[in-house]
Length: 182
Image (cartoon, rainbow, N blue to C red; front, top):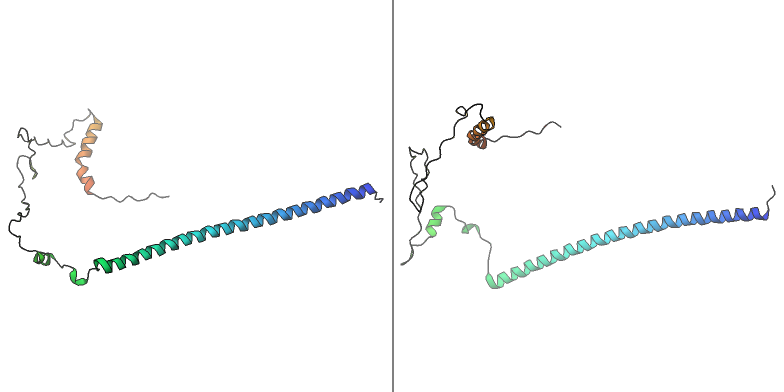
């Protein structure tokens, strides 16, 4: 094998290029590792800053509470209620009341007597009276049961009447929906 100077030069250049390529790859990997460390340090910095903000807020809150306590002790003298300050029932509350002074207004009183059921309307509610004419409102006509609804003319209307008649029963009943099999 005869090595000529051109051959040796080309082998030299190839080896130099290979060494440069290997160094470039090693340098790229090192730069990426340093970038990752910088990102981790930035994340830790953000976490530490959040902790500092939290601690500053906590410190300010506690110092405000301490200042409020000192102000209360000095100026107002408020104290938390003790067990002896609670009332056991209505009788103790009534015992705390005093008699009305001269010229005091009469207390407001409410009547709570039940009105008997009226045979005309079948309800214990008061009839609505027009303030202008003084006439009472006519009672609403009772809804027709589904059996009395005309058949064949309008099945949707008959279904709506049937649903409206059972509305009270449906609202008074609680149904628990079960989840479907999955």
